[in-house]
Image 1 (cartoon, protein in one colour):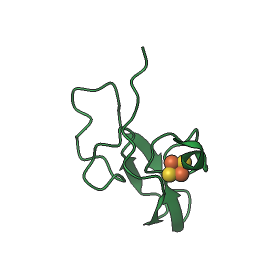
Image 2: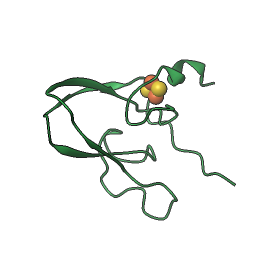
Image 3: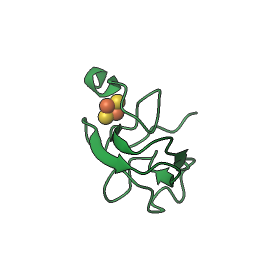
Image 4: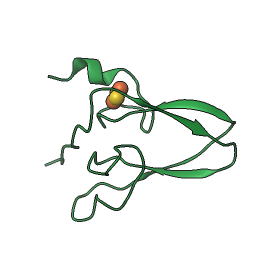
Length: 81
Ligand code: FES
């Protein structure tokens, strides 16, 4: 059985990324800010999404954790009940 992520919020959050920097984004939805991994996935099957930014700039990070393109919002939050 696949574990379902926690819906932190049904909207993305804007973050500013720096080129070449490695980020650990929350995929379980349990972290304190719903954006960055803080170890709250402990005891679940979830792991952070490791992403190295390709360029400087803003990105919209999924907080419903149902995006098919984590860590980024793909609009899936609009189809959640
Ligand atoms: S916030 Fe998860 S797809 Fe938009």
